[in-house]
Length: 104
Image 1 (cartoon, rainbow, N blue to C red):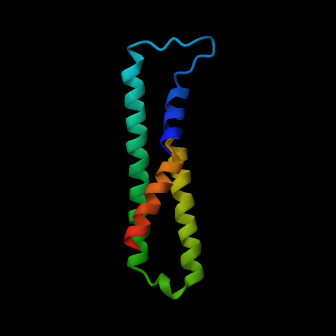
Image 2: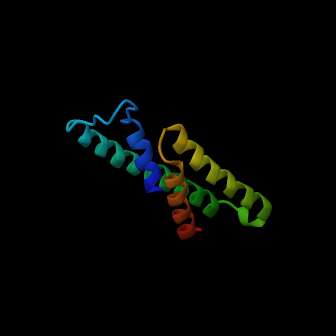
């Protein structure tokens, strides 16, 4: 997941004619990497907490097929939301899974 974030960050600064990354662009690239990582984690944790709240305060356990399908929908929502915001969907999905495994 970290390699994907690094790839997306450095893809912004890639120049096919030759490497000309200046010293002034290095802090901007590091800031882009850190912010993409932080916001990807934030999206995953937030949607994981939302799903956990819904599972905790409803009687979805009475309907196991609905519970399973809603779980897949929340996982896809996490991935699609992060990718739509140009963040790392894989990293958001990873942290969503961590939150769901802890609270469900």
